[in-house]
Length: 93
Image (spheres, rainbow, N blue to C red):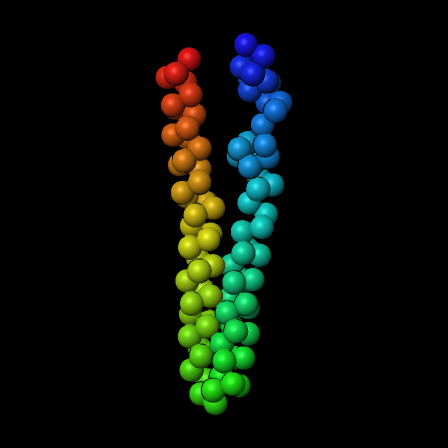
């Protein structure tokens, strides 16, 4: 009974489960960070192996793919999962 009142008033929920705009602030950082991380990893591999610019280019594309997947997951998949969980909770009551 107490838990139900907490969920109705919004207390006791984690920030990630509230669907507030604050959780989306890091989406651009995920995208940019993954591109930069893989770019530097590719640049380092090119320096070690002498294969310029191939690993750098591969790193940029892999980083972009990983970043776009992270953005897609944050903006599309996680909200769907939250909605399906809310539906399951509503049916269980």
